Amino acid sequence: MESLTLIDLIIHLADQTATHEIYTDYNLFTITKEEILKRSKENISYVIEFIKNNKVKHLIYVSSGAVYESAINENRLLETDKVMSKPGGRYYNYSINKLLTEKIIREELIKYNVKFYNLRGFTFAGPHLNLDKKLAFAEFFRNCLNNRDIHIGGNPESKRSYMYSYEFVIWCLKLFANNSHSGCYNIGSTEETTILNLAQSIKDITKSNIKITTTNELLEKNYYIPNIDLLEKEIGLTQRIMFQQIVERYYKWIKKAL
Image 1: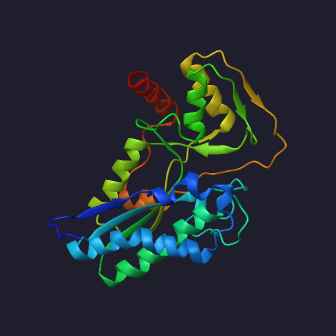
Image 2: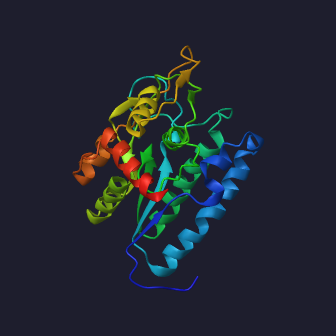
Image 3: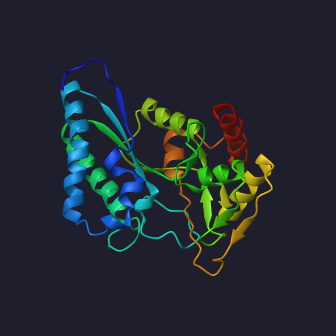
C-alpha cells in the first residue's frame, strides 16, 4: 500500500465478508473454525499492513456483543463474561469471526506499540440506518410506513437497548482523544426496552393503524444489554440521547430521506 502521513486513528467497521447477514446464513453453518480464522486473517491483514506502513498509532475495531455465549439471565454483559466457544448457534460463525479478529489485532498491534480498542458493540439506531436492514428497529419502521402488520417471532419480552449512532461516534472519538488504555470495551446503551415496547413505540410515533402480533410468549427471553462501566470510567461520558428520543429523531430523518 502507498504510504501516507499524519494518520492518527483508524476506525475499522464490518467489512462485506463479516456482515451479520452473511455469517448467519444457515448454508454457512458447515464452515470450520479454521476457515473462519483464514477469512479473519485475510480481512484484517490489509488494515494491519496499512497501520505498519503509515505508523498509525491508534486502531478502533468495532467487534460485537454477539461474542458472548449467554444472553439469557437478566445480567448486563461484562467484558469478562464467557464468550462463544461451542458450535451450533445461529450466530456462531459471526461471533467466532469477531473473536478471532480481536485476537489477531491484540497480538499484532502490541508488537508495533499501536494502541487498540476492541469495541464490542450492541444495538444502535439513527440516521442512515436503511429500512431494508434485517434489524428489528428498521423492520418495524418499514412495516409501519408501509401499513404492514408487525409480527414478533421471538419472546416479545426479550430486552434490547439502543444507542444513538451519532453518540456512538462521539464515544469512539473520546476514547481516542483520551489516549485510553488498549483493550476490550463494551459500547452501547443500558436503557432497557422490550421488543414489544419497541414495536409499540414505533407504531405510536408513525401513527400507524397496523396490528402487532406475537406467538412465542413461552420462548426463553433474551437479554442483550451491555455493562458499560469500564468504558464510561475510561472516557468520562454517559448516555445523553435516550430511547424515545432515538425513535423520534430517526422518524424525523426517515421522513426527509424517503
